[in-house]
Each structure stands twice: as structure tokens, then as C-alpha cells.
Image (tube, rainbow, N blue to C red; front, side, top):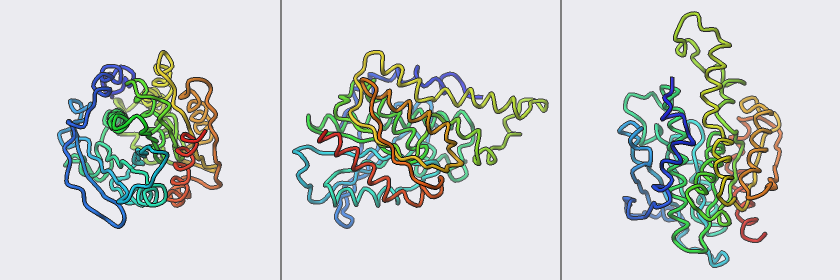
Length: 329
């Protein structure tokens, strides 16, 4: 059973707002950049705002910046794409493909973030990407949105014309949306922020239904042998909803500005993200603006597997539409 300190996203974000808003480059440990094809890749790490809650192996946020070797003039500003991972995305291969293409076509930089419990941040006792408790599943989300928001604020501080766009697939789509709201709470200029979730959801509640529910070890969640499936489902639903996008967006509306642009891609026949969760997500995305924000949505036939296959081209197209709309609207 998750503890309050791990599940109360609103409280945790409020407690760390000053830490995120003051995040500076001095806190980043940079490696030497290396050239790969037509881009420079530079790895960096810093102590996560949630380090005290994370296992030792996950306490440093690890990320890679992919920059074009010959930056193109893009309205005298630099664009940074904050690429968050999907569920189980331990490596950077798909995101690196998109980053290289965006660098070549537009001269934009990308920041590829490794999630806690994944890749080089995976605890030694953890099997692959399978986070071992509900507590750590929620903590993973709590940490990555604060890490992504911290990095966004750092890159926005590099110049008054810098812009950022948060994007991710599936879980990463949800986390990119929450990250943009957390950045606003921490004082970021929303007029320089875009969000482009590719097939996202408003909370992890979608895991309790649909095809993914069959992968849950329901017996492991029982405190008593008499706990019914319906009881467990209700309990899990309640806990997972504590990382609901509406929780953080409501706090954002109490005094923070809104982001400039939101664009989204959704699947028409998704059995992982049921349609009611998709529509819930889309309605909440509108609250990220100062007023009711127009959120153009591209609906694609097919489900989650098709979305994954189409991701390199469709998510890249989504990102470019969001950034170009932000710059020229």
C-alpha cells in the first residue's frame, strides 16, 4: 500500500517548487559530447528532486541532449524537445531516431530522459522494467515529472527566446502533460511551453481495465484472502487516481499562467487506453491553458500496438506541429 508521501502528487510538487524553480546548470554533471551522424550527443545527470524517496540506483536523473552539429536559424531561438519514455522504454533508440530527424530537419535539440527504475537507474534486484510495488510505480511518475520540469526550466533559462515542448508516448504522454503543469507551478513562462502527448492518458487508472489488467498479479495485492477482485480494483483505482492530471492542473489554475500550445494524437481502437479515458485526458489537456485551450487532435485507426509501430513518424510530426504552432500562431 503506497504511503501518503509517495502518492500525494500535489503535496510533493508544492514542497519542491522552489527547488525546481531554482534548478541551475551547476547542478548537472556533464560528460564530454560525442558526435554521431549529424548530431552531438551529450549525457548528463543530476540529483533528482525526489532522491530521498528513491532507491540508491535511481537517485540521479540521467538524460541525453541531442544537438544538431550545424544549428539552423529558427526564429533566432533554440527549441528543446523534452522526450519522456513510454512504459518499459529502458533505452533511447526510438527517441534518438526522432531526435536526429528533428535536428536535421529543423535544427532543434532534444532532451531524452531516463525514468527512475529504468535503464541505468534500475535497482539491481528489479527484473527488467517491472517495477515491484504500486508505491514505486507512483513514485516513478512523481519523480520523472519533477525531473523533466527541472530540465525544462534550465533550458528555458539559457535565453529569453528558448522554447520547450514536452512529448511522450503512452505513459510518457501522460507524464509530459503533468510535467508541463509542474513547470508552470515552478514559475516557467507558459508562452514558451508546448505539450504534444502521443496516445496518453490522464492517470494510470487505465491499467485497471482493458487488456493490461490481465497482466496484474491481483493475488499479490491481497491483504486478506477474502479480498475480492472488485474490492482490489476499487482500492487500486483510488490509489492510482492520486496521480490524476486534474490534481496538478487544478493547482496550476490557482495563479499560474497557461502553456501556449497543446497538440495530441489518439487511437480510435485502443484496448489499452479505453476511449473514456482518452476523452477524459483530452478534456483535461484543455485546462493547461490560461483559458479553455483549443486542443487539435489527430485520430488514427488502430490500437496501442499500431501506435507504437507508427510512433517514429507520427510522434515526430506531432512535435513539429506543436512547436511550429507555438512559434508562429
